[in-house]
Amino acid sequence: MDEIDKYILNLLQEDSKITNLQLSKEINLSPASTLERVRKLEAKEIIQKYTVKVNEDKLNFQYSFFVYVKLNLSSETILTSFIDSIQEIPEVVEAYQITGKTNFLLRIITRDAEEYTKVLLEKLSILKGVDSIYGDLVLKKIKDFNLNIK
Image (cartoon, rainbow, N blue to C red; front, top):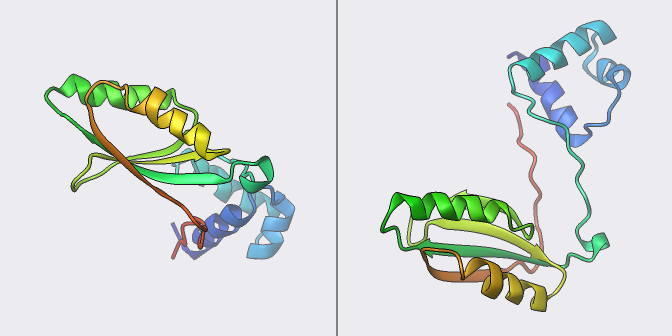
């Protein structure tokens, strides 16, 4: 992967709807060469998919929480069961298995505090092996994610 490929990745992260013609002008290559480079990045699975980023506030999803979950890991099936179960909870928009005092960090987005409480009480706390749950309300997003390819 050379500097042009890295530049392509940065540009596509900023605007995945950029046309091949616009992209080719930006990187100063022919449209055919640009398309070939993008296809190679896709084939190598460096580009995994193209997505749409929605404005959570405009859709009235105003509550974002980082939730820490500690499991009672008495068996491997508890871990597998938990991972499978959180896939089915739509309010869990991100999930990470982590080290430290807890086992998982979840990002949960809801429209209001009542919906968040329901998620905790009716969906998360009832899962097999859950030992403890605590969460932090996000007050303000300061920086959003784009991987700076250097």
